[in-house]
Length: 258
Image 1 (cartoon, rainbow, N blue to C red):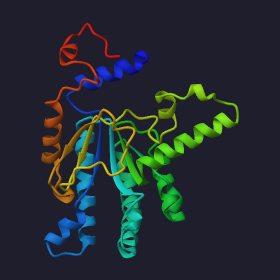
Image 2: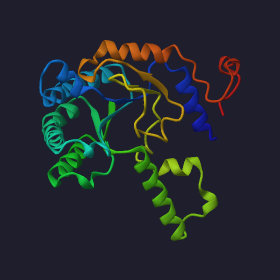
Image 3: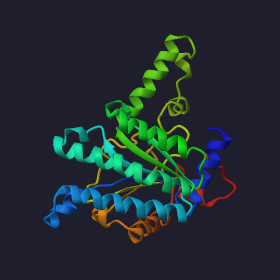
Image 4: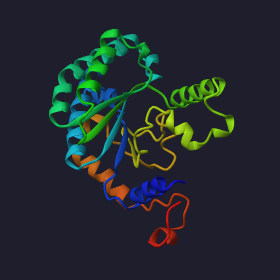
């Protein structure tokens, strides 16, 4: 492992605030159903929760916030709900891009965009371009994303380079694979949160979550607020991240994490 990698691990193990938080925002539909409302109302309430969490992460100097907005499996939902989600996605982008830019927040998208409408793809590109130089917080929106898709497209790119003679098979390593993932320019998540009571990662950032601390909560996403996030961060702070080392090694400052 390189010096940069070992420094990254050391920073991750000693940091009180996660550099990168990744969230599966689950429970919008159930939140609405509990209130005898249409699921659409739950998704709208979920957008309000996103706004609050983004603002809080920016204030706390979290470097990256990745939100699982729409998975590659979500196309299986009823057509009416998918259509509603696409409309809400487009309207939210139109409304929020300028606000993100004013607050020095960079917007990034990961996932296969080809299934989205031309209008939505154009709006995604517009948001990325407008905010590309911002550095207070990187907001990554995973849309039509799947962890297996992410690894598959990385492997395919590597194979194409091998066939073209630009790489040798013996060049394949964890570091090389990471270079071709959609998050290659970002630190790996320190803290993963899933709301809504389910306890699985659901094909989200499968490669990147290898050493991430996992946190599950019964709170439905529209009810997940600053205090909920503070509870998750408090849990994160209480854990010792060892990256394969012993607890004693982690306490010994003379030992380099490699």
